Amino acid sequence: MRRCFVCGNWKMNKTASEAATLLRDLRGAVSMVRDRVEIAVAPPFTAIERTAKALEGSNIAVAAQNCHAEASGAFTGEISADMLKDLGVSYVILGHSERRQLFGETDDGVNKKVHAVLKAGMLPIVCVGETLAEREGGKTLDVVSAQVRGCLKGFSAADGARFVLAYEPVWAIGTGKTATSRQAQEVHSHIRGLLGELWGGESAGQVRIQYGGSVKADNAAELLAQADIDGALVGGASLKVADFSAIVKAKG
Ligand code: PGA
Image (cartoon, rainbow, N blue to C red; front, side, top):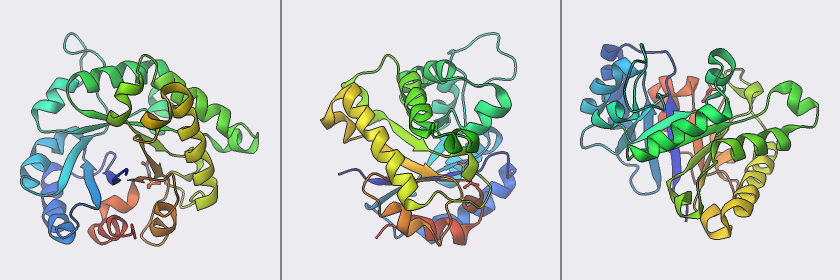
């Protein structure tokens, strides 16, 4: 069985001090959610250390929003996977559509980062998803397939259990427009089928695939009830304790 995994992506929000306040309330709000749902938050780099301290002994893991593919060196302004691991980070979000669109990230670059994250002993959350033009052009499944193949290059069935993927249709991110549960399930099931082709059914069955894109307290239960939706990557709603904890508790 794949354990439901809900991760909050704070994007460029919250100072370290603001994070500490939010996390104190969040800890309390989700403390009773034990084995059923795995929970993580991805603060900006500057709040990671405070976040890790604030969450010590809790049921909430720490994630990061990006990292560099190289282990160290002359890369001004960048952060390596080992640096994140050292702060207590367990997951790294890679290939988010904002990084692809605003910072020129490619599948090839994401693939290199996935290798770095796994090598450092953390788990990647690899984001894929189509734009509105691609969906309207009937290209959704082709676009998503190419992204999955590109980002997972060089891995084998043995790595399956270490992967989290996130299907995030670009047109649904931060727009208030959510994919219907049917649209999301169609893509999730397609991704799992592709993983089966690449790695075999047993390994494909272990990969958790989150849905992301305007997940809210009132649509989470229906999305999380779909057969191939194994969790959520939550942006805006993860900044409010009441909304995020309601999403965490939405899995029936
Ligand atoms: P949103 O963002 O929930 O604000 O749409 C999701 C994401 O970007 O991961």
